[in-house]
Structure formats: structure tokens, C-alpha cells
Length: 326
Image (cartoon, rainbow, N blue to C red; front, top):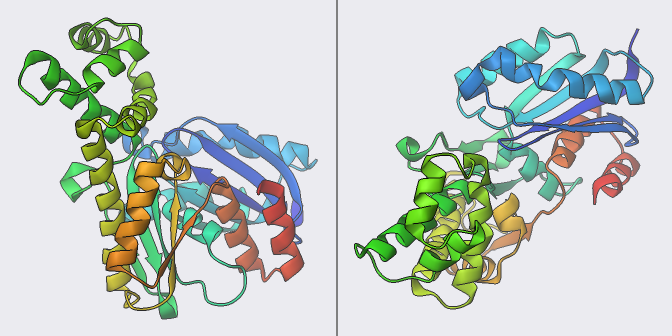
């Protein structure tokens, strides 16, 4: 028979996947965390397989095998309409819920940062492993970007920043580029003496690719110490964040309206002063009525709130589910 009055909330990202089971009254019944969600690498069916043990775990915590009433899945790499359709079909076919909603994970961040009463209008920029932006305007209008990498014009995100720092450091050491403290700080992080040594370690997998993201905080540390090259990379990231936000606001006709701009993902949620201050300054110049809001709660909260929206939940339910994560 399943468990009525319940919903599965899913936030599946490039680095981790969170699943939660909530009641339409806002009570949290179970949570589980798993690995990355990468349909662009393994295909929709195998990517959705990652969700299966997590869903089983949260259902077991509630003492049920399902199905539940609703499932709200906000997924990384669901960037194109065709990808959303394939993932919706795959998830619907698993029989986990009677009603299934699938969208890009940027919309989960957006929902987490928007109020639970009144208009659900705003723009979100996520800068975690990658970068993306989505917006909701009046009458349900949306603003989106393909967000599939350099071929769609993207610049930034933690993985990109790490590679950019490596590029500048390598060129600084061999003489092709401007001197930078990154040439010493990056190899030192991995116990290497030189960039040449680090390049070899990365190329031969002595340092696994999965550890490259560790260089992003090193970049911000070098920038905070005053290094011009590192500061230039951080400034460019701020520019890209604001550019995404202002273009989305303009598309939705909100550039001149008081509108929340939700900032989230690991890079933005860390509130690195150089990055955060430059973002707020540029936003104030280019979209003076925009209201920047940093969300540090996990995006699965946005998936849970979205499920409550569709269930017609009351104010008490929203407060209860927010307290569970915030």
C-alpha cells in the first residue's frame, strides 16, 4: 500500500546525492547520502541506479517499502529538455512514487532560498563543482542556460578554478607566464617540491584526479594573501556569477525589480571575502534592486520544499521542514 502523505526529496549532484523522506506535514522521516549522479557518463538507467539504495534506506527508516505520494528530484546534469525527459521516464518506471517531478538541481537551490509565502520569483546561481544559473519570473516564466561546459560558454566552478590555478602555476614556473605564489602553494599542498613534480603526479595518477578540488581553497588562500594572479582568477569568477544573474534577471524582466538572487554551492556558500564582496559590489552596480541571499542549507531542502508546494502544505509544515536542515 505504501505510505500516504509522504514525499521523497532528492538532490543529486556531481559529487554527492542526498535523499530525504518527508511528510506533507513537514516531518523528516529519513535521510541518506550517496555518491555522484552522472548520467552524462554512465547513462540515465545506471545513474538512477545510484538512487535505488538511498531510497530503500530512507523508506526503511520509516518502516515502509513505498511507494510514496510524490517524488521531487533535482538533478545535476539534467541540463537539456531531452535529458530531463529521459530521467523522468527512468525514475517514473521504478515505481517509487505515484507522482514524479524532475528538474535541474539549480532549481532546488532557488527554492531553498525563496520565501514559503508570496511570489516564488527569483534567480539562483550555483557555483560548486561547476556553475549554473536558473530563474523563475512572473507567470511561471523561466530563464536557463545549457550549462554543459565550455561549449555552452561556461566559466568557473570549483573544478574549473582548480584547473585555472594549475595552468597559471605551471606557466609561472617554466617562464611562459606571470610569476605567482600559486607555483609554490599548489605543489606544496600535495607534498611536492615543484609544479613539474605535481604535474607529473597528476598526469600519472599518483595524485588522483578526484583530489584536484582541494586546490580551490588553496587558490583562495593565495588570493587573500595578495597574489595578483590568484586575485585575478577570483575576480573573474565574481564577474561570471554576476553576469549569469543579471542576464537571467534581464530575460525575466526583473532587472529593475526587487528580486532575490540566491547564491549557493560550495564555492559561494563558503563566503570567501574577496569573492563575496566583489559579487555584492558588482550586483549593486548592475542590478541595484537585486537582493543577494547566500544559502548554506543543503539543496535537498529545496527539493523537500518543492514537494510540499505540490502537496498544498501549510505554513507549519514549511517551518518544520526548514528547521530540520537549517
